[in-house]
Image (cartoon, rainbow, N blue to C red; front, side):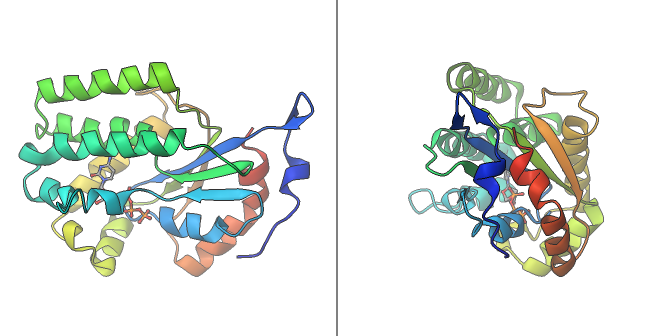
Length: 230
Ligand code: DCP
């Protein structure tokens, strides 16, 4: 990635001090969020917080991501409770550099994944209610503010192929319908903005391309991403 060093001077100031920003990258499974983080991780003034997916695959030796795919009715609440905790930990993590770049958020966990599990009957109403009360309480007390969401928009067919190619073993049984539903939930939330509150501005990037071309797209949007986050 090309280093970009002029960000601090371009960032808006509040009371003479540079503000801190949190940018979050969202998108369907395998939409390229990690590649986005990877691309910007060496940028001056940016600190990257990766998604805690490896924690979900090893909770005191147990892989609750795998269990959730094997038996969603039994394990969805366990996984999503833990996702909610680990996302909250990332939101409240103190930020040293001016720009914090994070993968996913407590919002997509609730508005896309939990919503999907509940709608499809895999998470019973009472479990959904408990998780929702936790979610509302967390937002009342911690706010989890974001300044910009970069939405990597893809088609379900493209991410389905990528999942097959990347061979993360837990994900090999994911049917295309699951990706279609998750896609629709991301679209309802971030594009149509009719279902759930959108916590900040959204920048949508067409992420259906190969990595080399995506790097060009990222570079073309660098200023927009880094400087418009206020
Ligand atoms: N997952 C889940 N519930 C959540 C968040 C994620 O079940 N609240 C699952 C879906 C995937 C895995 O965790 O199997 C990781 O999904 P992400 O889309 O968050 O991350 P990826 O690694 O797929 O992102 P990308 O390929 O875009 O970098």
